[in-house]
Image (cartoon, rainbow, N blue to C red):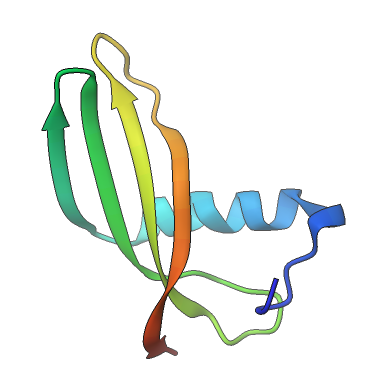
Length: 80
């Protein structure tokens, strides 16, 4: 919310998170019994144009090929 996102317009942060996942490199992967976790770090486009550096986590279950979003949060001290 602090970067101009609004709860009433949930589609905007959802699209920004997809953009973040596609256009930033994977910082780390972790394999578990249940599947693969992908940690992505990089800038995310924000409505206020500050474009913070964010860590997002995505997961793909075993025997699946569709990632699902787990969480995201700003990385302190890193902005564009």
